[in-house]
Image (cartoon, rainbow, N blue to C red):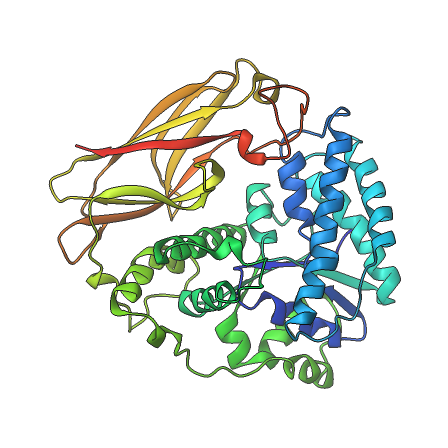
Length: 439
């Protein structure tokens, strides 16, 4: 089956919907901008191992729930909040059929990107049939995070364009806060947390987008999109390979509101601005934004310590990639991280090595360690405190924003009947940062 003709991902609350939905003005293109989260689902369920036969019924139930939430409940909530009627909608019976077909596909030993492609191909067929348009795409912001973890690279056999939509952090965080302020918004929980955690959430997605750009994805900065939508859409249509006449480009561009100068910084206190600037600047560097002349990063003042500010579940379990913030005092030589993990032997192999590393935002390995994956283990990572590369805070302390990475993703429900095996909760297969010390 032909899979999607293009995919849109990026930074949540960063303009992905506006960019993706505009394509529906083209007579030959339909982009499902209401989100499906199918690529993310493929990563969670079969990122490294195919779904086992024993786990398939539970996976099918979780898949049906995923489709219900994203293809029906999220759409209905957006309509309730005043969004326009989407050009295409699914019903309960549609989801039952999709879940059955997709579950059967999951039972055929697909994993990783192959699994994501198979699920996307089923969705693409339905989008073509229902829209009547030959070219179809799908937008879910987390596509970027998932495809990065799946190791996506542009290749002749993987030629569908991937667009990553990014935006400067203050507008994104302001939008996150607006969602959280709505008491009936049940879909905003992922944005909750302190200012540092919101900035970390931004950095986590931005760094994934930066890696995808190096792997062949196409960049769309929202500032460029809102400032000159005609140019942005003309280029995007050329990438997809369809007509980009002046009339069509104008129709697409009319969907974007000109934002002018981004003034969203003014709504944040001075110390919040400094913290957001200091945490997000390394990721902005990777996206080619450069330093904002209004940046307050040099004014940040932080106490010594270390914490995960993105990619950490409330009970401590870590995603495969998380964002780490370390603050050392000037006399410290090293930051010492103690990480505990437990991966069932049936998942990673009784003697397989699980590797952990701390990576700078430019990809340099700052520390690494490993332990047998089938056993409960505690490992220590030692990171050199380097005044030449760490950010200097106003109070004299040194700040490092980096990624903590594990080579093994969570593989839920692969052995649902095992007491220490996978379950619907992906956090059952992970690790925890137990302690941070400095010397």
